[in-house]
Image: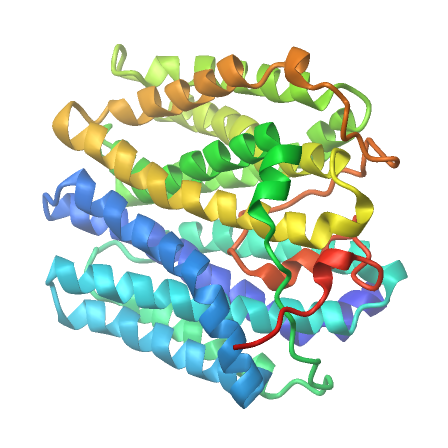
Amino acid sequence: MLNTVASFFSLYLATLLLLLGTGLFNTYLGLRLTADHVSELWVGGLIAVYYLGLVLGARSGHKLIMQVGHIRAYVAGAAIVTTMVLAQALLDNLWLWLLFRFIVGVSMVTQFMVIESWLNEQTENHQRGRVFAFYMVVSGLGTVLGQLSLTLFPRLNYEPLVFAAICSVLGLVPVALTRRLHPAVPMPAPIMIRYYLKRVPMSLLVVFIAGNLTGAFYGLAPVFAVKQGLSSDQVAWFLAAAVAAGLVAQWPLGQLSDHVNRVGLVRFNAALLALVGIPLWGWWVLPFWALIAISCAFGALQFPLYPIGTAFANDNVDPDRRVGLSAIVIMAYGLGAGLGPFVAGALMRYIDTDMFFIFVSGSAFLLVLLIRPQRVTGEYLSEDAPTQFVPMSEPQASPAVSALDPRVDPQTDVSAEPVPQE
């Protein structure tokens, strides 16, 4: 295990720095705009366009890697991200910020494609699970540390932006100096939307709603926390507690999902999630320790929805179609993460800030209503179901990670066949 990790150390370090800057920036954005009395709708919109850039930028990122190679594409992406972050320190125009955040999403998905395709290309099949798992751990750790690093900046001025830009630039160093061989250019998997909508509609719904919740959380949970009277440091701990609890909870819930009905587990999880949000509907003023406890419960229930939904989808798709499945799952998640902040932001703007957790409970209750074991016929059940549960952090909408999933074999997967380039 240590040898495997050490051999990819430069790529893991680049991932850590990339998520460190992103985790800090997303939390800072909500706090800064709230302090400036900017509408929650704007906060949600800025997070939504970032996720939209992640989803729509995969194709342009692939073309760039084909034209100039992995390292040059990564360097270009890092340079653009750094420029956009620093530009936000110079310009206060929110319409320009929308453009900047979209460009950051497009650029960052290119960086993730470089790292993930590199990991996949140079990983042996017997090491795939360990390499994938450690990549997800590093991704989650970077997000948590990014949120906690906000406690280093007592003032919500330009300083956090400079720190995020420093992380982006430092991420260039391990990639530029790596001794690993350049991987082959990743070929995009064809996305047969109608095939997967027919096979796994409920799984895609779970993933879509999980994206709604996660996108709204990263954009608007800081706004909610500030309106509860928390300081910037306390907001950072409130968010980090949820993400950390979500990462830790995936292992026991994942083991449980391999031995029980996954549809029932999703419904049970969603029901608890709907109940957890009730104390934060605005009826009571809770102490900080209670908010942290609820945040941990929220993270432990919400963040595992995506990997459990993905495992449920893999149960009902043939093994030779799972690379394409991973691509459409990431697309569904990204679209949800783009929509969620808009909806939650509008509710918070036009009704009340406490609508954030009412939105959470409502989304979870929707899963309880629509995801039912009786609707699972077993007609498309895979021969190796139940498939192995794989812990996953928040996906960054890069299709390159699809082939890293230890449940798939890209060498035999027909959905991984090259797509003709225009």
